Image 1 (cartoon, rainbow, N blue to C red):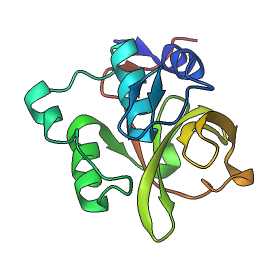
Image 2 (cartoon, helix red, strand yellow; image 1 turned 90 degrees about the vertical axis):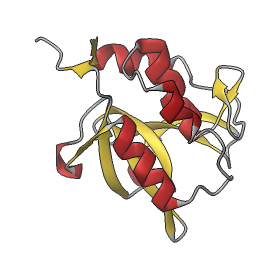
Image 3 (cartoon, rainbow, N blue to C red; image 1 turned 90 degrees about the horizontal axis):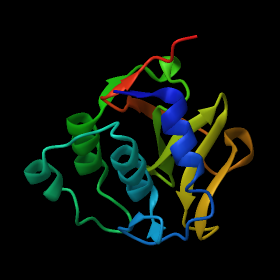
Image 4 (cartoon, rainbow, N blue to C red; image 1 turned 30 degrees about the vertical axis):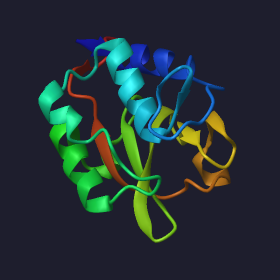
Length: 146
């Protein structure tokens, strides 16, 4: 099991990683790759590899239905209002939901931004990723002990 603080700590080490479609390493990643890379590096997600392989090829504009199916297989769907640090937010870009980020602080998200060309962290209200439509939790994350 991994703590929320450890997920955020790892996610922040990805800041500045170049944007790369279908990339999932610190050499380059997209928004899905950032989630995959952070999950793998921390051990916060341990997907069945046969199932994961079905989701490795996707277009630059992922199919929202396929994306929702994958998110529900590998992560725990939670009410949006309950999302907190280390949780994954699913955003609408244009008319369709197709972008992911990780909450690093209340109101702040880290994500691989194709427009900026790299992984960035910023306040949601000041970006094009303002209104998430769903939230998910890494399955192996535990609540931090205070």
